Image 1 (cartoon, rainbow, N blue to C red):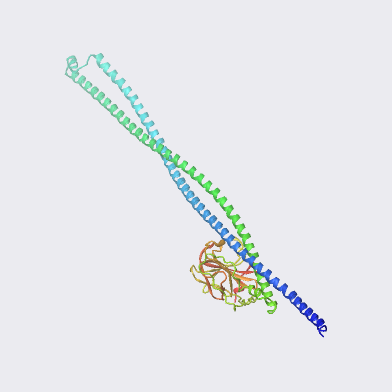
Image 2 (cartoon, one colour):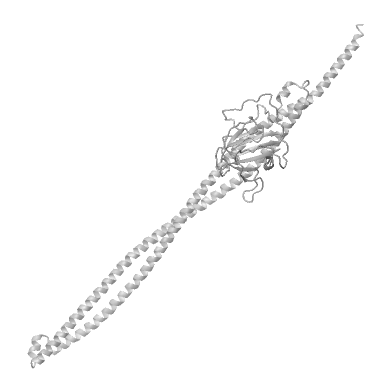
Length: 461
């Protein structure tokens, strides 16, 4: 009897071994797959940290380049304004120089005319002087040099009176002629002296104007050299900016690829969690599974310096149900900026500014208006410290599951942290004007598996 039980025991042991082997073969692939997904999630978490660091570096580079371009443009504008002012001053000086040159030409003509008059008077003086000499010579030759000689030589009283009158008239005429010529010469010479003095003053003024013009021309040359130098710096910085933009575009693609991998990993973990039996899966595997609404404790945070880390999620929280696809008259997401409905820029191509990958909702220049979550989800990005933020400024991204996410950009303040669970309608940020923005507004984006799509159909209702 003792030997008869041995075959049964051996068969029972074989059955148990086979059942254990079968159970092991059944559980191991699922467990291994879960471990692989957890490892992939950890790798995604590290990639997220690397992306956050890269985003900060790119953001700082873009911010520095934008600031440098602004400074160069301001310097250039000042130099151009200064050059234009110099040009205006040069134009005024050139007009003044032309005026003084016209005055000098006019004074030269006056001096020439005065000189001609003096020369003519000199000729008259010489002619009158020759006539006077002839008269004096005639009187001398007649021997009638004095009134006594005339009186003694007169034959009678009438002869005496006639000769006396002639002498008187000659004397008066000679005296008047000499005085007239003398006065005329003195007058003309005085006028000529005045004109020459005036001409000298105008000449000195002209020299000063010429000197000022030369100085302004020199300053203008220096200003043009500075403008050319600034233009070179501007061109170089603009090229660096274009390189940074291309690098930013590559970063956006890298971020989109990360989001696709993140979504795929979440779906895979959900499938593993739903497919493995609770009796045959070790508890460690199930506790490590991560869903879109329940990121692991190692989920990356773009705000490591935040002093208010997100509160731990309660274990009873389940992933949000994926929102239904929007119909033509069905609203999928809640309007993210309550009280403000003006759309200033739509999704799509723009002739001047390029392709717009979101929806701009005007905040009416009301800063710090409330921005709410469009749907339940988990915060996977929250930039609260970098005001440029790759052009988005302060921004938030919420993962809603099933490959969908929404992003809220140009905020004045972000009120949530990475890992926070938010509900539809929760206030997550405040309207601002940070990043590449002009005026208070919300830039709203919808992502699907790493691709940004038109948000408007998701909001219409």
